[in-house]
Image (cartoon, rainbow, N blue to C red; front, side):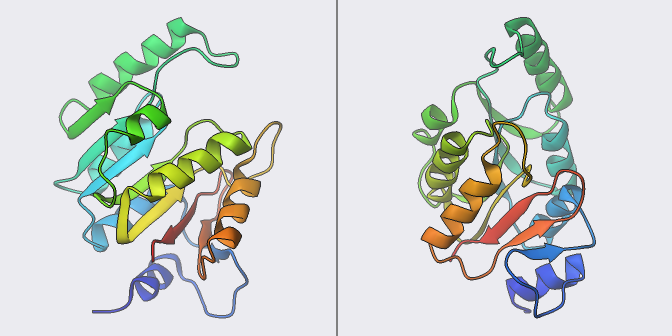
Length: 194
C-alpha cells in the first residue's frame, strides 16, 4: 500500500521539493471527498454547514459515510435568523438520503459530544476570525484519529479573516511536517494527523 502522502501527491499531481504549504495544483476542495474515499475514510464531520452544499459533495463522494454536520444556524454578522432558518431547512432536505447527524449547536458545544480520535476526518468551515479558526482546529483535531485528516476551507486573506494566520500558527506550533493547500479561488488546507 502506498503511503498516504504518495496517494495525496498522485491525486493532486504534486512533485517533491515544494515549500510548505505544499500546493495541490490539480484540484480544489471537491477533490477532497475522492481522496477521503481512497483513504478509506468512513466517519467525518463538517464544521460550518450552512445549506449543506459541500456536505452533499462529501456524502456523494464517500459511499457509506457517516457524517456529523455541525452548525448553530443562528444569526451572525449580517446573516439574519430568518436566513439561517432557511439554510437549516435546505440542509435537512439536501442531506435527507444520507447518514448524517445534525448538531445544531456551536462548534465548541458539539466538540464535547464527539469522542476523541473517533473521526477519520474533519472539514472546518465555520467562523473565519483567528480565535474561532484556532479553537476549531484545536478542538476538532483531537476528534480525528492518527492517520486521519484535519482540513478546512478559505485559506485566503480577507477582512476579519484569520484562517491563514491560524492555520500557519497551528502547523508551526504543532510541528506539522507536511501540509497542503488546494488551488482555486477559495483554497482548502489539510494535513494528515500524526
